[in-house]
Image (cartoon, rainbow, N blue to C red; front, top):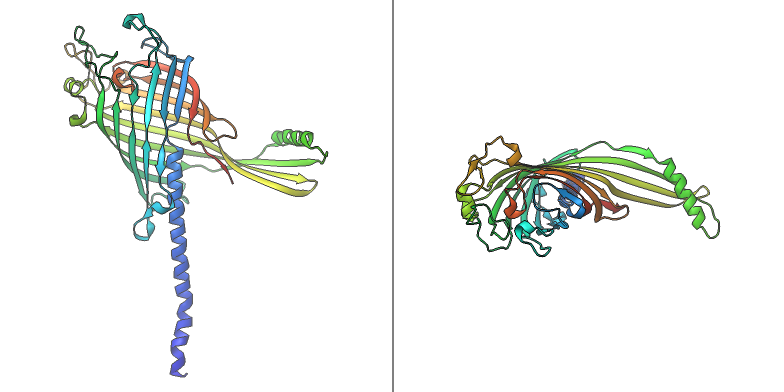
Length: 386
């Protein structure tokens, strides 16, 4: 063979390998970008919804009179997506999340506190900032189990300037006492479990739709609808450690050990979604196909436990030690069900049963009570046209 042709033969021999390598690298990049987008969407989806309720659908025991209005206003603003796949070969996904939050309770008049109006008493300001991350080996949309990590900072205050304790009784001043935890540190680990889907033919829905479409048809052209959906279930979990640095804590409460500065928080969120597929026929001819993915039901369980070894109740002159195993004063637990309103993404009805050993509404932290609520919830519920 002529020596002049050998470089050409070598080039054509190596060309498929080079092309294959480029295609593999491109596929890997696209998967990483898809993982980063799914990571952002998941964080946005499982964020705690805003809720509003009020009398008579907001019952609680042991704290003043029933609330006229009880609202937890918050919105998770998530920064992430395809461009947040970084590192060597884009093997890490990242996201930032800022959650401005204000909790508001509107009390009824209470003569024991000489209330002469219906005030919003000591609202809670609780903004949070989180950074989430995960390597591709632990976070991958092709896996049924995923894992991620996060760090966060929060602030909790009520905007009041009264004394922390009532002087003549030495009890916590829940009327206008100052409450401020300037900096709260969060460290967390979370994940998702996805379960098998199941195809269901909905014959009753099919018949109803057929009747509606035939009735609305002005030309009496007969349309038929074949409709089916797949059930999809996922369990999202998050385990969080909360730490209140003493330097940034309320010094009087910290000095007397009456406010929990170390907490373990577990959140479990189960989401049932349905993938709908509708086929519209004219005679035997397929005219239109509509596909959508909609959240059907959400159940959320929140558990919080105060783990301070030195933890007390009562006033500063009459402190009572709370043992580590005394759940009635250390445990907060809430079970909430959300039912999204059909054809909307942001609105749902909710019901909640809860017990608070330590009320999470700022300076009311020494109050313990049961609560039952019904109302409206607002969040980024899953609803997508495909």
